Structures are given as C-alpha cells and as structure tokens.
Length: 123
Length: 123
DNA sequence: TTAATATATGAGCAAATGTTCATATATTAA
DNA sequence: TTAATATATGAACATTTGCTCATATATTAA
Image (cartoon, rainbow over all chains, first blue to last red; front, side, top):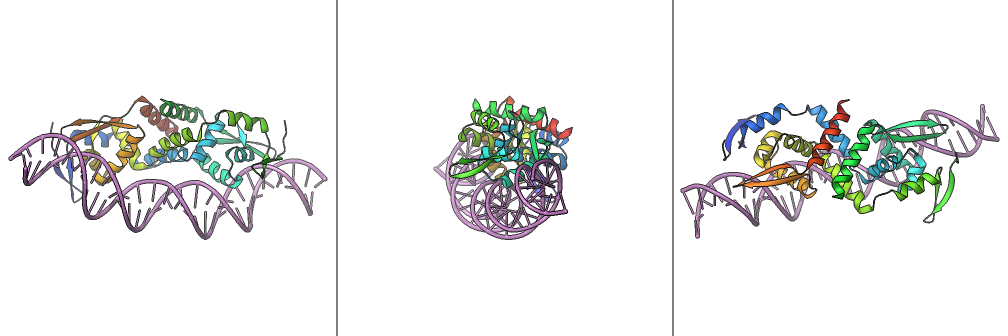
C-alpha cells in the first residue's frame, strides 16, 4: 500500500493519488450526479434557520401559513416561499380546510432527520 | 377553536393568528436561537454537493485529502476548505499518519443522517 | 539544516440564496 | 356576483457562499 502520492493522468491533468484502491472503491459506490444533487438539495433546504424553524414547529403538529408567520416573526410571503421549497422536496405536505392550508411533515424520514440532527448538536 | 384569523398586537405590529394555542405550544418547544443556528449549520454543511460527496465517500472508509480531491475532481485547496468546515461542525475527524491526514466520519449520527436522507430521496 | 511533501488558511471575486414588494390565484361569505 | 380572506408567485436587490490564487504551516527525508 503506497504511502506517498503518485501522479496520475486524468482528463489531461496530472492528479496526485495516494490510495488508488480507495478511489476505485469510492467511485464504485458513488451516487449518480442526479441523486447527489437531490440529496444535497434536501439537506440544503433544512439548512436555513427560517425553514428549519418551520420544520421543528411542524414536528409538534400541523400549522397554517399565517400561524407559522406569526411564530417565526417573518412575513407570510416569506413563509410561503419557504414552504413551497420544502414541499417541492417532499419535506412537508398540505391539507386544506376552507381557506386555510395546514402544513405538516411529509413522512417519518423528516422526523428522523430532525431527531438525529438534534442529538448530534446536543451532545 | 377559531377558524378565522384574529389580529394580535406583537412588538407594535399587528399579526394575523388563527390558532393561538398552537403558537404558544410551538414557542414553548422551540430551540434557542443559538441551538437553531447550530442545527441549521449542520444541515447547511451537508447541503453542498461537494461536501456531501466527501461525506458519502468517507461513509465507506477513511480517505486523505489528495485522494478526496482526485475523487471529486476539485483542487486540494477547495477540499481542504470544505473539510475544515465539516470538522468545525463535528461531521468529520482526522487521524494523522506521517504527512497524510486521514479523514473519517466523526460519529454514528453522521452515518444515520446520510442513511435517512438517502432513504428519503430513493423512495 | 535544507528541501520536499501534504495540508491549511486568508483575501477577493463570481455565483447562489432569501427577503421584500407588488400582484395573482383560490376559497368562502354576503 | 362581488368582496373579503388566505396563500402563492415573479422580479429585483442585498447578503451569503464556495472557489481560486497566493502564501503559510507541519511533517519527513536528505
């Protein structure tokens, strides 16, 4: 097993590589660019304090748009934009009752992501 | 239980609220601003395709900086910047062997966050 | 000690992001 | 149907973010 980098030719550029077998293994197990983009978009959506505040509030039960706006002290328009993004990524879902749209977490994965993240931050 | 919004005075501004009891409940269970910032920073760090690629590679075993750079086809400097951020948030840790620094996932929470996220995206 | 290797860091710049404001749509009440 | 309520959306602007380039630090070999 080499401990020093060797120079490899890749796409016309020379690249330093120490453990070629790890590179090969990592590439074999890598996601497709499309999957990688979807997964990173999921975490990115949770990475804004405003949107995360929405998700944490919904973890305790469904809420409508104007209550979320009041809770987070931002405009209803801003909340609506954030909710759209969360919905596009299947992080939240809606239920309509008259004029109100009630938002809640989409599935158990979202609860789990929040729980594990919290555990990591609280240690 | 009111179905229509009532106007509340909050910090000098009037705010529409439909379900006051949900608001009170959500505020009681809310994180401190500091915790919210830390948690969102955690997800935000995972939300970049480059950094996520690093984490997914490390989920299969430790790697050094130059191998990661070769794998992800970016400069070693860029990888180093990304690794620093991941390390600051306790997502990765290091082990030194001679000149090489070997990076690996910091604890099981990180594996779990990746696994749950993948499950959510793959459904 | 000096040179070479491996990684880290700071400043600056281009690209991505979140909010606001104005306006649009959808549902219900009159 | 018309007015009122609740939410959604598009464009524009200010902030944040991630990369590059140059340089710095740390470890080992000579």
